[in-house]
Length: 390
Image 1 (spheres, rainbow, N blue to C red):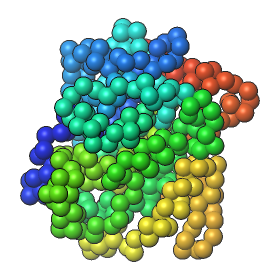
Image 2 (image 1 turned 30 degrees about the horizontal axis):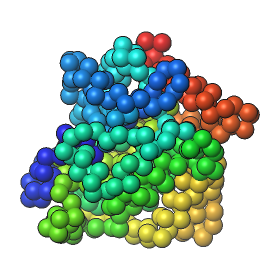
Image 3 (image 1 turned 180 degrees about the vertical axis):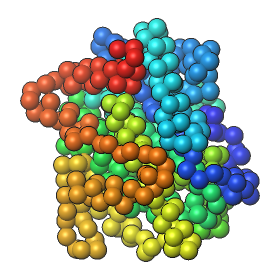
Image 4 (image 1 turned 60 degrees about the horizontal axis):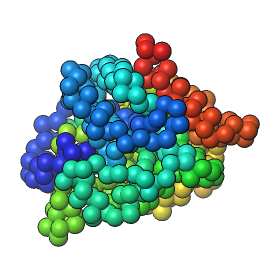
């Protein structure tokens, strides 16, 4: 949703198709979003413009830092990596510089899916034509979206193939969300959810969440063209689906995950998401250019809700077997399924025993206050995203 992508080129669909036809398989791009916080109070601070100006003057961050709708948030991007390892190295360089510049600006950086108590009514939209248009078009929905996430891009050659891979990834979105769940608190209380960010963003934005299968590029492009011709969208960045073909980069972008508090866990989660995209492409090729029977929307929706509500503490429905299985088992099956692609892509998936939501709620149940939990989270983020500075 960044200003940098709002060029209009993404709706020249012939050009977009050519971008995919000439794309390179399994290149990687990483995007991580951070809260801007007062180091003492941990309140959100409207410091995007100040920090962004410092980034623009920095050799590493000038092409990496970006805005994301609200002025209490900043995003960094790895840029294109030819391999997962290269992308993570590039992202680490951006992490180190961002944390250094934030400290010099008197800003603490937080990384969870939603701030535990901040009032969305205090949010301010970045003052650019792109974001002002979104504010006008979306109204309350834009104002309410004080959320933070992590996105993964994987290069996929071929327009039909990219659409097919996006279609296949739909059924893996619930498990990727469950693993990433890191936003149990909102408005100063325990929501009972593991990812309230998903309720705020994915359930309220238009053209968001899990799209229906498009099957091929012709159907996908026809729908996008219709939205454009009817004035529904003016740019490709208004397609906010949780997995989508990215028009500018020739990638399949996975957008379902909460921001991660621990830097190593963010990298591990990105690796799993990338491997899932890669495995969907390998399966498509092995089947002669077709997907297996795709999950029904209603089936995906059931497990999507279970991921929002229970995260890794819950169960999901195995619709083939007609029974429930633990979400942990679903994760193990997913890692095993994606292991051939992980090997091809040089990815080691090493996920923690507990995710952010589980750790935060455990601390809450032990009597920790939301302020104590958030402060511990901010400290962990500083130590693990830029360990050499700790």
